Length: 158
Image (tube, rainbow, N blue to C red):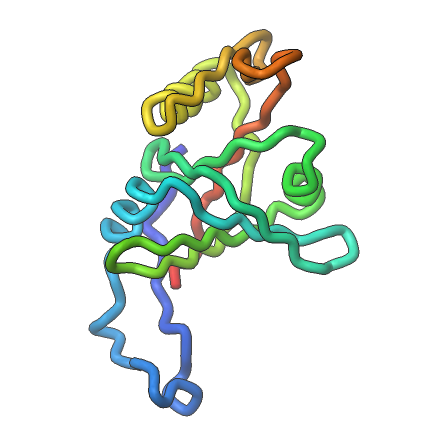
């Protein structure tokens, strides 16, 4: 999946920002956001519960075609939330950037796409997934549990 470059926004309007920066020239490029996501071992995924309350959980991100991807057990709270409402936020802190990516999650399907994401997890974390019959399984755990992969297509970067 290839998405267009997201739009960066300032966190504050001038009247709200004191003592924060409101200079648009200080907005960071998407390349810096990608470098942050490549380097972090963990970030936070926030989703929306059925009753509208937020849910945040740590996840391990990988990038595929410059799009953040996460893994989740299909029955987990985050997967159930995303199935109902795909709106989500990824937050991460790198050495020189605090990152907030507002996006929409989409399940990853198809053998080729699943294998590409599985390879990204194996490369970054040494986390092997076996792709069988269009589903990802973690063979290193008892019972070979199934995992879902999600693209978190970005819409805004803060």
